[in-house]
Length: 129
Image (cartoon, rainbow, N blue to C red; front, side, top):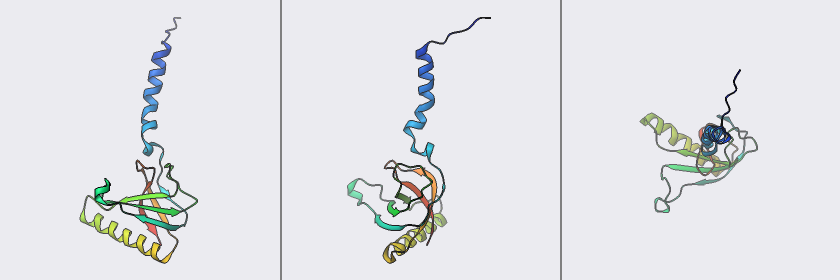
């Protein structure tokens, strides 16, 4: 019986190659699901000349349960774009609900898609008001 030895540097490289997608992708560790209820402390839309992606809205909600696994546990984002006009209309309604909840200090529960933004915020795609 012959044992083939794989050099240490080759084993290390193959291990590193397997881990790279996890290191550079927040979405790899994210999960979809509902948060608990919390109040919205801010709704943010950066100006276009600030270098932002102008179709994304950022929201900070004081929740204690966030299934996403993204690095910021109380930060959330949504894009107001969509592949269809029906999707854009639904997101506009969602945005209106966020503004209503913020202006009335009503608690909200968010549905998260499992996608993390580069700033560590979780993508939201549903809301209970």
